[in-house]
Amino acid sequence: MRAEMAVLGTCLHDSRVALDTQIVPAYFESALHRELFSLIQTEAQAGRIVDVVTLSVGGLIESFGGAPYINDLVAHANVERFSHYEVLVIEEWQKRAIRSMCIRASAEEWPADRIMEEAARIGSVRIQRAQSTSELVEPLREAPFVKEEQVQRAMTGIKGLDETLGGFREGELTVIGARPSMGKTDVMLHLARMAAQGGYMPIVFSIEMPAAALIKRILAMEGRFNRTKMRNPYELFTEGQKKTWPNMIKKVAELGMYIIDQPAVTVSDMRSSIRRLLIDDPKARPVVFIDYLGLITPPHFFDGNVTAQIAAVSKGLKAMAKDFDCPVICLAQLSRAVEARADKRPMLSDVRDSGSVEQDADVVLFLYRDAYYSKQAGDKRMEIIVAKNRNGQTGFVTVTYIKETGILVDRDDPVSV
Image (cartoon, rainbow, N blue to C red; front, side, top):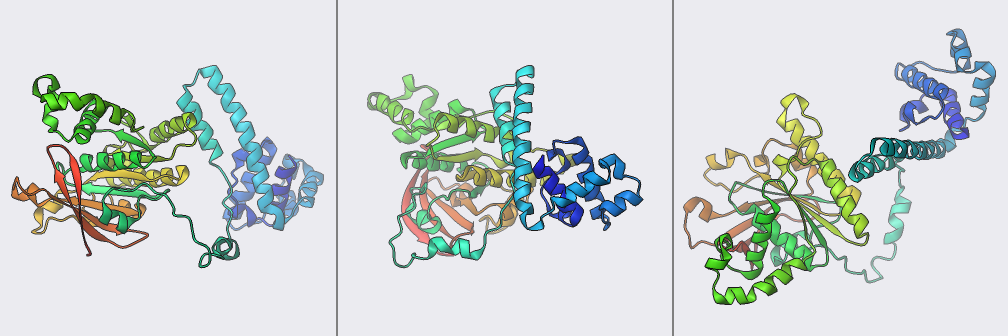
């Protein structure tokens, strides 16, 4: 309660402070404190002052404990230490909120994922502390004189792309856009396999395709056989393929990849699933893959405004990447505007229904195949276009894409844009 008194006292001393704080009335334990803080904020927003005098003239002072109590609050005022008081008030509110949540969860028999989601929401409230340049520069003081350990990242397995991106960075959102049937899902599975082989935990949210279909694709990629054979392996596999099958099963089983094919999934659902996996394996380093952006259920429907819905989802994905400190790679459909151009290579403006994706994403990759339009069966080239790279150069890399197996083969042929 002392921290609440100090916050209120400081706000009474200088009402402008109430406009700058991240505290809201609900964080106060005392109902009287909640009402007083709400009044101070309302009046401060209107450019008016709340103190002992204005409360007395307005006839409200008795409602808030009388002049002696208001003077006692003001005695706790300390603008210099206000940020410390803020933290104390929020920490006490979090303890109460968690206790209350546990009681309610027990009474209403909440499922575990709802409990974790609510606990995470409460725990996410914090005061953002500004860091000075003197603090930020200190870890770099010896940078030119001490060999830095190589930062390990989830790599793509494509040399030119790894040189351009430096792998997928923790806390970053990567969007991979292409027209339908261009090979987006196969590229995603290739990247997920590479991440698994690098010691990461790939978590695939497959909203469009069932998990059983994805695992068949992965097996076909691992065994490098035509995936149409997966329709009836008993009849269509050669004897050689049947002999290697147990080894393929073992390799895929040991990838440590997780696939979640829940329909109508929200970003909140994804966060809950990731959190559960990390509770089971706290040392795991997740890399999240999502197929695809347009199928994620938005947190609000914004009166049917699809652009606003996609914008809310993309912001949620970026926040998820930062909060879990992991790479998030999300597939996206491109608009039909691509088809109307002579050069059908995608541009940033082609990401369907959202200009915000361009802003939120740290990396935007596009996939393009001439064979998709020319129908030349022998043309196996796929261009992976780096259209945006917040931390490096753009460009494109050409790989060989074998559609029958889903395999990407590194041609080691980067071309600078």
